[in-house]
Length: 273
Length: 303
Image 1 (cartoon, rainbow over the protein chains, first blue to last red):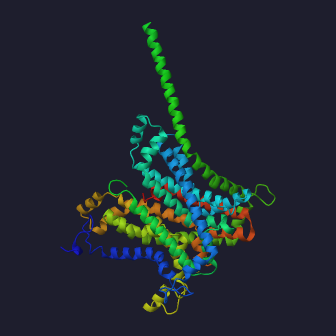
Image 2: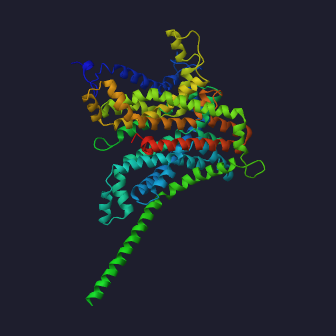
């Protein structure tokens, strides 16, 4: 029996009978991935116009990007805000996830729901709401304001990722440490944290990415010398098309692919999760 | 004497128990207090600003309570058109995601987990790539001299370049691409949980593969599909970037209108009222989703 006639699933269907599904899935996966990757060859085009595939190759759009004060400053802002968001959202997320996981209090369910509201509320509302509130206290166009708003967006993701990590960890190990005389804090840092470190790292990377890729809040709340990369990109996309965007997009694709792959492959292999 | 002793030890035990209970309660509170910093962020960024918008939406021109901002929505035809566009885009995008997402999720769920993990990267890579980048890519692919038009003309599908972007078509293509992972991830998880014995049983009882799929597998995958669809629908309702860029000003959804009102008229009351309507529609849909499927599992199928 060759592959074609072999059963493909738990019913009598064969791989041959499933061929249409394989072809269709391949097309859909191509449709998913191709638009993400197509910016890479585009960015090496020499043409002023967007063309694919490019007729002549050059690095001029990278030179343009690296030589522009506006783009460089925006890139620095985005990295700064992303890293600060990561540093705020990760510890806060770990603390909240741990507390909600350990506590048997009646309010935990309600608190969890409250903490994940940033995922439920449309971002445009968070954007105009913070824009209005920041306007009252003079926090628009500040790094601190943007970091605070982005941390709110990243918190639910961090909490959910760390909670998943805690679920696959046996909490009684921490209880053993405490019964042997360690304080709760010491037991957490020495016993629990090392074992959930992969979810904590994942939470940190995703927090960074959430902030780095965020557009709508940045459009409203960031500005002036503190405008983010995404804010400038959005303006450039809406008003005119500048091939420099292709170079920047390529860098962003490489960044998110690298982060995603490190999450996938640095994670614990084998046994759990 | 012995009696007093017994009493004493009993009351001592009692005291001890109360102290333990107090200590337990104190410990519970000290653990729970770890959520306070996170809660402060949520209160500052979500609760206070949203309450403010809510208040502004009910503020009339004279500074008192009024429903005029909401009344306006029923009066003007432009608002009606925006609501229709928003629902149209959201429903069509959701349907497109089901049509494309179901087969792929099914394919992935049938693979051995190792291979599913590899192919899953095709879903996760776009999921974690900036939405601006993907919107930009579609802008290039769909333009008049873009690869799609060139290809279609070479194959002979159409003679002259068709306008694929800066209109509804472009918006729908871009939105479907961006939303697809949000449908596939929860659906895939639901499919993985379907008991294989069910399909064995169906085959054993004489169902051919097609029958077994439609009468056993499909109904079992339905909750995952409904949950994924509702999430996609909700995200579409509040979408801003893709319609703004790929719609070229011709596709105005609620979020775009909120921004336009603020940019052109500085009318916080009108913008807030529209926002409140959006929030109510979103919350209602998610409430339905939560009843159909476990909410966090659906949103974070990846873990």
